[in-house]
Figure 1 (spheres, one colour):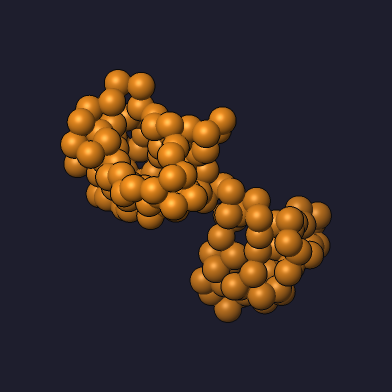
Figure 2 (figure 1 turned 90 degrees about the vertical axis):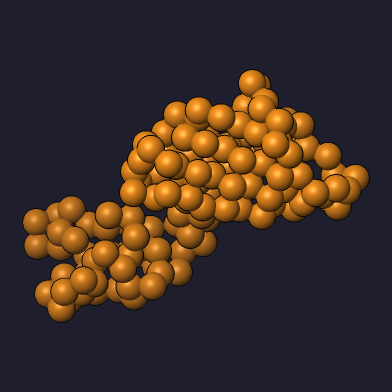
Length: 136
């Protein structure tokens, strides 16, 4: 529902939506004669919330108090994805694998091949490359 392209799958739905299908709408009307019509496009607040929802709540990348957490909530048919995150002079190569088709729940959290039971890493901005593998 929040992806604007979904409102343009058919000619009729695009006519109802009435705004650009490539821009986040800040609101979608629910009033009887306007139900489904988008509004307030090109609104920076809506795009930043979409970015946050995708990165933080779908892919699960969270940075809090200098620590990196990965807690994805993805469709079960996603088998894997990766994120390259730079913090200062350090690079964090994050690979999330989903061999059992789960939506969430971390089975393994490895940093440079070593299991990490805390399921987080303290960020280092001084340099280095860190390989993180998360299995759900």
